[in-house]
Image (cartoon, rainbow, N blue to C red; front, side, top):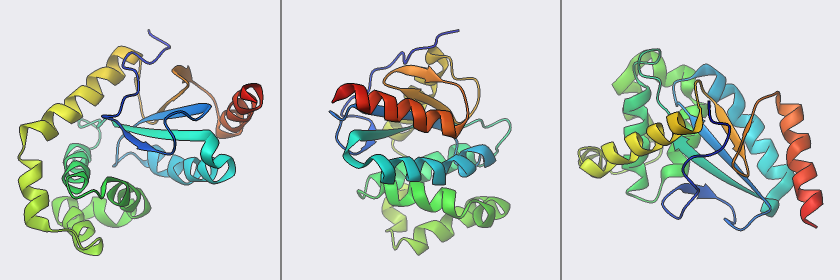
Length: 179
């Protein structure tokens, strides 16, 4: 199994923060995954704590067999991205996971309304072959990188396995070494 990121971070990725930051934290995530939803506020805490020293990258890794609405949620997030609102939808999906998952597609539609997105434009974007290609590219890159569950994290291209306290420590050490 690979322990390094097989697909380098690029301008095509969904990135929050400076791509030149000392730390690039990549998450392979599934919007229906309960563990990803639990990790979400911890990632936000890392971003707040380390600010400009961390670039956060999200890549889709929908585990459709375990989570029947994960792929549709990824498509909705990409539909929102077509309106420049990927991160808004990313956050909404995790913050409201307990509310939308029981309702599937109808629950996801509630997210579009909550964010005042143009539902017709989202639906049109979701039908685009580019959305399918994007999700497949992310997923296959995760497979080649050794992701076998979600969330899967990489720090500066190296697979991270451990708890969030350790992740915080690793990130702080990398930042300290960059100074």
